[in-house]
Length: 154
Image (cartoon, rainbow, N blue to C red; front, side, top):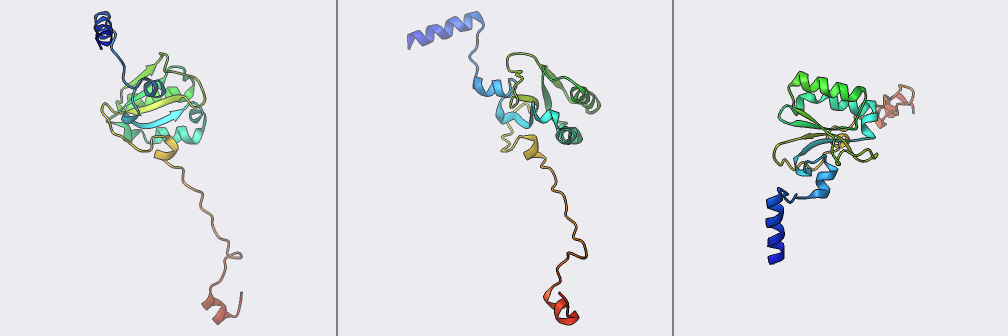
């Protein structure tokens, strides 16, 4: 107990503060999962339909800030920065050890200042893609019982 107290006093004297949930903070660019509204990983930013969805919903992010992986480059990064300026949304480029380049690592986050505890935060879950509609051709349309009864057909 006294060893733990001595360690805490020494760390406080050195300006070292213990960090809560370090693994979670590494995954979410220094933020916590409970504050995330939308998350995109490094593979999702390469998919035009998902990046378009993210950019189309910028109006939803007006009370939030955006964290961007500092290793992200290209047109999508430029579009995010332009939209942030247009909508007056603060953003931060994260260039520390949490900005990883693996396929499942975080590329972009929309985060709140306090906990919002959203159940689904992945871009495909928050804004699901619309399923394509299938149109029935008149020749393939099945006729009902009453149509067959009165018109004598299939």
